[in-house]
Length: 505
Image 1 (tube, rainbow, N blue to C red):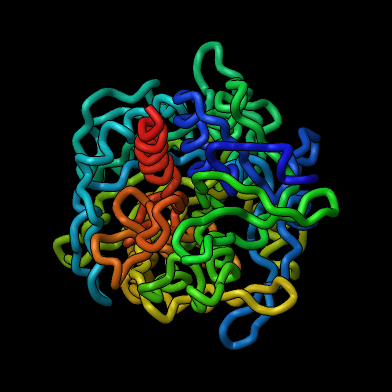
Image 2: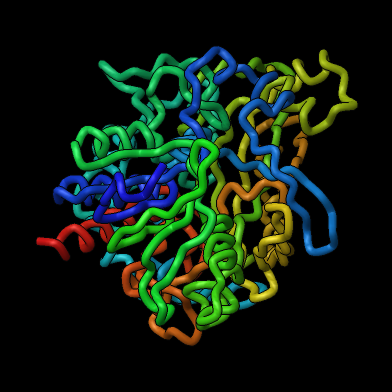
């Protein structure tokens, strides 16, 4: 497809939360936007909510071949579809805590400060919550930051099993609160409580994902076009190596270059870093936007451990479990004063999920465990480490060298949570940890900062080295905090997109 047939003002690479939020702001400003997405549109089909298809057959997972620094091969938990990873996320939409934007001491070192404070993002958090239709209630979480307005929707009520747990937690002096959730679960909403939300795609359009809440509205503007199944191969600079002049793509069997005045890279923390590295040229031998050497470094991914608390005398028939969260341990406790993290409900565990992780387990046992468990995620912050790297390998392969930090604190948090479950009546607590093969909350690989010597992007996500390139996904995070990143990506992307749109005014 010859590039002279199109003339966008902005090319956006990636259709997840970051890219779609920028596209929506540019569309409202009347800009011509071309979005490139390497994956297809996700088909609406019965397998969307079939645990056998999703977890055992891995129907929607990438088939890529990645490896660790030690050469261990694995297939990553990556999903390439229009709308990005939010097609499969669990609907959690947290604001970072106000203290998360400041430097914070952890057991293994310092969580660095962001180049701006919470107040800068607060209005954009509010807009993002409106766009995603977030349910929640302020005032119950002792760590929550201040807010200038209420949630768009009231909290999703707990179903009986979860309500009982929340009541018993409160009886222990804890502060359980309604998890902020982007799902169309209210009077007149499209959610049918199918029981397949967390880690599944939604067949009903009820999940607040990037395609439904951001991209769809953007595409209703005549100047916005998306090309699915289009792979960005490398970015091209002018003869000085300063401005980005084009992106080389592969589409429908052809390879060609698209030119535009502005480029936004939103391919996800791993693939944005890889594309910048694969775009190396004589002016930038280590990759674009990489004067600091930090592109592809400081990879972070939350430490996440799933707990199955077993209650043999109780059947957990909850349809939508993602209504309960706990932050009493977020900044530490009296007897463990360094930050520990967040607790939140997981979607109900089903037998195929158990079998995908434990193939040796008999199916009847897996079914019994799923029916009699209540499932929670323990999440802790991972600090940036210069040796946690992402780099491209020959044959389109990837090396992900993760050097986790704060593991001892996370293990203490897991042990504390197991004790909590037992005090709530669980007869046993099973544990499953997520490792390098699950880069669900990937961030930090093209981080922003004030100093070009130690960061790739300025506080507006513009590359220090290339004034017409913005990188807007979780790669810009200087720190990971210990909460789901989607809402923060959306807030910053709306902020950046607004500024880009106004630049043409």
